[in-house]
Each structure stands twice: as C-alpha cells, then as structure tokens.
Image: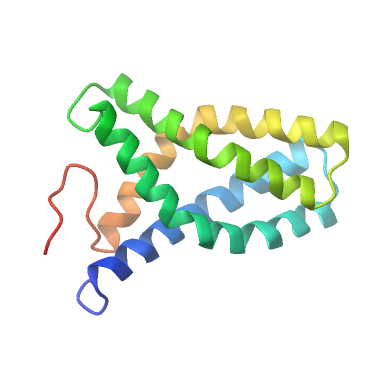
Length: 151
C-alpha cells in the first residue's frame, strides 16, 4: 500500500485516519458523559465534527510537528515530548471543538462543561494522540517525527 499513493497522500490519509479514529471516540465520551449532551446532540456534533476533522487533520499534523521540532522534543526527554504534544493539541483543537459543540446546540451550561471536559481530555490525550498519530503514519508509510522525509 505504501507505494500506491504519493508521500503527500499517505501523510494526509494517515493524519486524517488518526484524528478521526481517536477524537470521534473521545468526543462522544466527552459530549455524552461529561457535558451531558443528549444522544441526538452528540450525533449532530459528530456529523459536524467529521468534516471539520477532515479539514483540520493535516494542518494539525503540520502544527504538531512544528511545535515538537521547535521545542526540541523529538530528540529530548519524555517530559518535553509530553508537554509539547499537550501544548500543540490544546492550542489547536480546543478552539475548534468549542465551536463544534456550540454550533450543534449545546446550551450555555453544557457548552462550558464541554469546553472544560475537552480541555481536560486534551491535557490527558496530548501525548497518547501524538504517539497514535506517529503509529498511524508508520502504518501508512508516511514519515514520522525525527525520520527523514523521502524525496
């Protein structure tokens, strides 16, 4: 499969697969069990979220790589990698997620709960998602951080 698609396409596919799989699950859990949204609101949020994830997955992958490289986290300590992945995820995804649940009909109270829940999730998931992203990239034959990019 690695040779069927160009490097750019494989990277785009990997970033999208990683983001869609990871954050569809965490989004549903947050919206239903933390924010207290009704299942129909959760479904609306996921239907709004999926196309937005397709639009933002690769830009996030680029942002995350830039944050990780700029901070020196690639060849550094696990603590620095954890902090950099977390910072990248918080700064990019929380504003987008807030807009998704706001547009999908969350009331003021559930909107605040959802944003706080998402922030907590991003704090907990920054590094696990970064590792998941790198794993999916490897599976798809796309370069990961610290790996030279083929020409």
